[in-house]
Amino acid sequence: MKITRLNSNHKKLGAKMIEFFGWEMPVEYKGIIDEHNAVRTAAGLFDVSHMGEIMITGKDALAFVQHLTPNDASRLAQNQVQYTALTTPQGTFVDDMLVYCLGPERYLLVVNAANTDKDFRWVVGHLAGFEVKAENLSDSYSQLALQGPRAAEILQPLTDIRLDGMKPFWAAWGKVVGIDSLVSRTGYTGEDGFEIYTTVSEPGRIWNAVLESGRPRGILPIGLGARDTLRLEAKLMLYGNDIDDKTTVLEADLKWIVKFKKGAFLGSDILLKQSEEGIPRKIVGFELLDRGIARPHYPVFVGGEKVAEVRSGTFAPYLKKSIGLVYLPLEKTDIGTEFEIGIRDKKVKAKVIPTPFYKRNY
Amino acid sequence: MYPQDFYYSQDHEWVQVKGDRALVGITEFAQKQLGDVVYVELPAIGVQLTVHQTIGSIESVKAVSEVFSPVSGEVVEVNAELNTSPELVNQDPHGKGWILRLKIKNPADVQSLMKAAEYEKFLEGLAH
Image 1 (cartoon, rainbow over the protein chains, first blue to last red):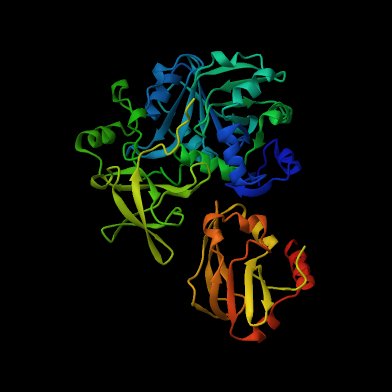
Image 2: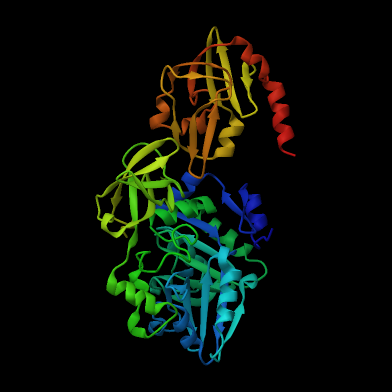
């Protein structure tokens, strides 16, 4: 198994370790519920070094990124970030990701850990005709995510970057405890927070310093277990569960990252047709009306007929109810529509509700 | 750690026998493996169970775990507190986190279970 440069830090903290797509990662330390609620009420620190970083440089860097993605990267100023995807010619997902504009000829793609090799092969496979270079820098980067209402007050004493001047989806270069880092106001939890990228061999100094600064403010180290429950409450997509190469960007309710006006991109013709003719199905959020917990792959019934399977589902620790995501036929996606989910030998009632399930109020 | 008067199954359930009644729960080891328990599915009163039949399930945030009956019998009481406070299974697995009470059908069933010392040895064996 691969390990991050913070592996020994997790073990020292007593983390329960699991294998995650070839990586040994912490799934929980104190417990998923405590960790989840710490992020919602104070702060949490995640090791997300397993994620992938692909650097695109050269004369045609912007044109190349525009060709591979549905969002409009030309709107990015230097140090600005946007959520987007790598799309197939069918308008479905190779992956979802963040794109950082680091310069007029320099774009950084930050991709899911599970898809890094696949995504790099995809990028390389489309280089022809573009004066551009693609480098897989994933192994040299460590990445920490500090998330929660107290994230800024915990990080500010440790960095020369003026955090109150950083808007969401912007980044800055600077030092964190004297270590050169790229810091962005981004995250995967629905809270305010920062993602810290560095290529030094000992990012543990940042990890320890953040935990120490955050200790009196209620910070906890957070594992992959709570990372999943946090992102689901915030209705953030998880590749493999909610989006894949069979779901289009419009079916995934991500119309806001599709900018047809910027020009053609891989899959734009299919997506344009879908936007004109209507989508056959759409992902929606639901809550259970009876006792139980809905989980991925549980069958979903409308009018007694199986129409889909649950994509993501859990007991939400902060909201204290069972929630989930499912693709329903478009005519069944109105808020309030009731349906049933098969949980073992029972059929449990559920209802379509607005998303995100949780939205921060600050 | 493991009460001396309990019997233990290989599936990490415990049984406390009092006359013809058996109190059943899951062990400290099991609750630690599960993580935070958020939902417990309890059987109905009157259900007849055979040894190793599924009693119900205990769900943590991440997973669903089946609970098997360590002895045969009839469900006479369930711990309704677990409906509102499933975390009792984590906090006090050998006490307040009890799951159900059976009227024992075949008293000889407990003979195939382990005593505390044996169960602790069994756990050590699992670690390797």
